[in-house]
Structure formats: C-alpha cells, structure tokens
Image 1 (cartoon, rainbow, N blue to C red):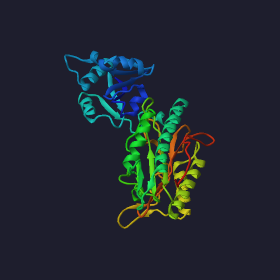
Image 2: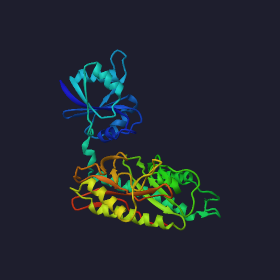
Image 3: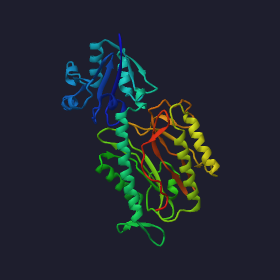
Image 4: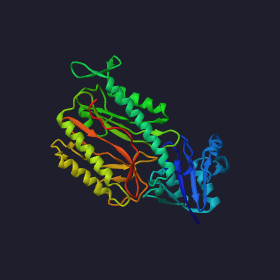
Length: 371
C-alpha cells in the first residue's frame, strides 16, 4: 500500500496548504501528494477559481466526484481517495484535525505526524519570496510612518496626556490608523501593538487608553500581505517629548545589541551564540535581567528573534536554546528589548535575510527615539 501526504485546512490559517497550492480559500479543502502526484480536491464553489490560482503542478479534482451514495463528509471523501489510490498511511501536519485523524485510523489508515515541519523547505526563501517580503516590509514601514506622524502632530496637555484631532490620543486610535494604512496598501494586521508607558514593559501587551508625553511608546506592526500571504514585522520605540535618562540609555543599548547581532548573522552562525552576544551587550550597558519578588520578569527575557515568512512566527528561532547553525536563505527578525515594570520598555526590530557573507536587512526605517 502507498504512503501519501495530506493536509485538510483553509489557506487563511494554514501556511502549509497555501505554500503547497497557492490557492486562497476561507474554508477547508483537501491537498494530497503521492509520488509525483500533487492534487487538491475542491468543491464546485471553488473549482473554477482553483483552476486560475493553483500552482501549475497541482492537479484539480472535484469534491463531488468523490461522493458515494450521498456520503459527502470530508472523512467519506478521504476514504474514497484512500481506496482509489490504495493508500495505507498519511503523513500529516501537527495541526491536522484530531477528528479526521481518528476517523482515518478507525478505518485502518495509519497517521504519521510531521513534527519537524510539513514543508521544511519553507524555512529557506528563494528570490521570489524575498521580493514578496521586501514589499511586506515596505508596507509595514508606511504604517509605522503613519503612527510616527500622529505622535509628531499630537500635543500634550498640562498633565502630559497627548491630544490629536481635538481628542485624547489613545493606543486604540493609533492602532486603528495603523491598520487602516495597512488596508490601503494591500495588507491586514491583527494584534498590532501600541503600548505606552508601563504597558510597554509587557512585550505582547497591545496597549490601551491615553498615551502620554515623555514616556516610551512601543509600536510593533506585523501585517500579512493579502495577495502573497507573506508577513512583514517591525518594531520601533518612540517618546513624544523628552525621554528620561534611563529610557535614553536603554534605547542606545537595545540599538547596539540589534546592530551587533545583525553583524553576526550569516550562514553557519549559531542562533544561541547570537542571542547570548546580544544579551551581553545589554548587560555590559548596565541592564540586568531577572525576576522580581512579585514574579514579574525584567530586562531582556525573550528570544532575540524568529523566522518570518508565510507565518509571523516560524523556524528558525534566534534564542539561547537553538544550537542549529543557520544554513543560509532564512529570513529572521532581530528584536532585542529591555523591559522594566517601573517605567516601561524599549524594543527595536529589523528583519534580515541570511546569506553567506552576512545578512541583508529588509527593513529600511530610521531609528528615532524622541519626537
């Protein structure tokens, strides 16, 4: 009996099925490969569009042709596929639906989970993918410029609360303006971060409420391009007005750590060593890391970066646990940060492509703390 690879998912959420087929669909559909055959099974609703959008090496099959005696569930369709191709085992991604896996096992089909990635080659970007990612970074920069412009034109009142367009300027307003700018330029974003003051001490705090002068505002934008599916990612930290001395020193340390890390990134470099070098730069600048008595972490307590592509977080990870040398072709973020509950945080993030002699920085946006 044959072995085959199988994905059942929608391409809005599954990077693997979008990578395999190039087909965008909000509802789950079937992709499988066996030997040289790569195919999708699409309903009548999606078939004609699939003909236009699917990669040229994909064979299109009609869902209706797999229905037997009115049994039209996905499991039933898969069993028709199993019998027609004499398949005894499927290799599936880690997020394969448990219900379908149990159904197939019940009917004698073995399931093997591809725990190290369904398409390991996704980690290594070709020139066409790099072109898509450069565009994603360009669009991300447009949104960051919109946010910076709003902070620039805002005015503090006597209590330091920022006002813009005759209203109190909040994280929610800046986030909305960022997301609108992204929509205008062919991308969408979720969970955009605009965290001011002490909220910025929590790296994934999206931010809420009024923004204030003379305190850090961390802005992290990571949109997905609608047409290509590739993500951009960028973080900058701004202060409207005068930054406190501690924030200025933290900003300088984070920028030095980021630039030092970028100089180390090349084919053969070890992510753990890069992370540790960034950590050493921050410690040398006088910024310790640890955990307070109340359990809150402070300093630099997250990984230096992560892979970027059809997912906003993918392999490889730039952290102290990853001892696998970079092989070249990866696209990764470089985003050291410092966070202290007493005053807030600073994070600066660029995206780079790993090459033989070094890395290409795909982020072209200035560093400017005070506005």
